[in-house]
Image (spheres, helix red, strand yellow):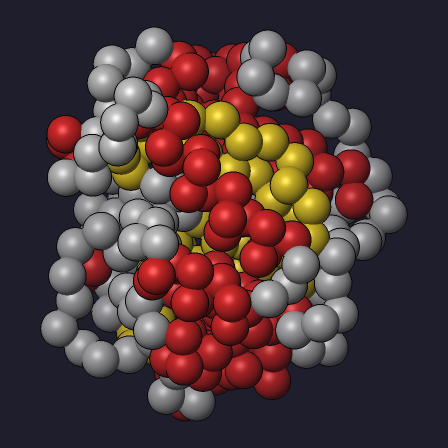
Length: 288
C-alpha cells in the first residue's frame, strides 16, 4: 500500500478548506489579471504543454489560470505530467525526483501513475524518493486548478533539481519514449525573474525591480516562443536570469522539440500587485 502525500501548501499558498479553495480558483479565473471567466470543458485536444508560475494564488494565480483555461477548453488528457522546481537541495545527481505517493489537496486525492513512474525510474532518468516532495509546493499548487474541473486523470509528479541542459534533455527524452503515444500534457511549474534586495539582484539605474525583471524575462520568453532551446539555455546563463525552474522548462521543450507552437498568454510581475520594492515575474505559456 502506498501512502498519500499530504498537502504542504494548503493554508499558505492557497486556502486550506475545499469550499474556500474552489472559490479562490474561481477568483483567479475571473480576476482583472486573469482571463475573466471560468472556462467550459472542451475536447479540442490541441494543448500539448504549458509553463505556469507557482507562487501564492493571490500573486500568480491569475497568470496560471490563463494556461488552465486553455487546457480545460482543450480537454484535460488521461495523463498530466507536472515538472516542478525543487526549492531545497537534493543530493542525488538525477535530472528528476519522483514519488509513487498519491497527492492529496483540500479538493481530494489524485492518483499517481505508478506504471509511468516505474518506467522512468528504470530509464534512470529519475529517482523515486518521496522525501524531497513532502514540503515542496511547486507541483502541489498546480493541482487544484486541475481538480476544480476533473480528477479523472493520472498524475506524474517530477521535481527537477537540475539546471543543466543536457541533464534536463535526458529527462525529456525519457518522457517522450515512455509517453510518446499516450494522451498526455506536460506542465513546467516555475516562476521567472526574482529581482530586488531580497533576491540579491538589484535593478540598475532608475529602473524598478519589476521593470528589470520584465526586461530580462522577455528575452527568455522570446527564445521559448521561437522554440530555441539551446539559445534559451545560453540566454538564461549570460543574462543571469533568475528563473527558479529552468530545468523543468528545458525538459518540457525537449519532449516537444520542433513540433509545437508556443504562445505567451500572460505576463506580469508581483510588483504590479503593489508588493514593495522586490519583484517576481509570472508567465503563462501554452504549447500547441
